[in-house]
Amino acid sequence: MRTNKSRQILCSHVAHVFREERLSQGVSMTKLAKRAGLSQQMVSYVERQLRIPTLDTMLRMADALEIDLAVVINRANKSAANRLE
Image 1 (cartoon, rainbow, N blue to C red):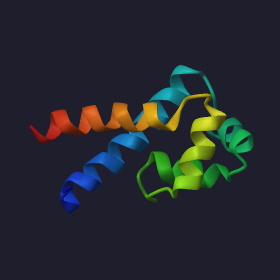
Image 2: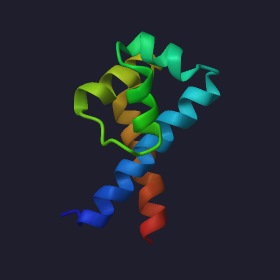
Image 3: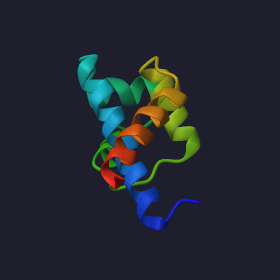
């Protein structure tokens, strides 16, 4: 069972993975938002960890970046696990 702190860390790492992936693909926030059907402000909020995205928002962002959400979560989970050790 995850603690509140471990959930927060995982959420933080999910946001980081999305940002990393967007930047590695050379996609602007505006372009990602348009592809995902989200506002640019929402993408910014997620990446800056000002909002915890819903499952729908994460699926939209992952689809727009052409990456499986499971891959995003697995990368974030590995990164978060390293931080908790």
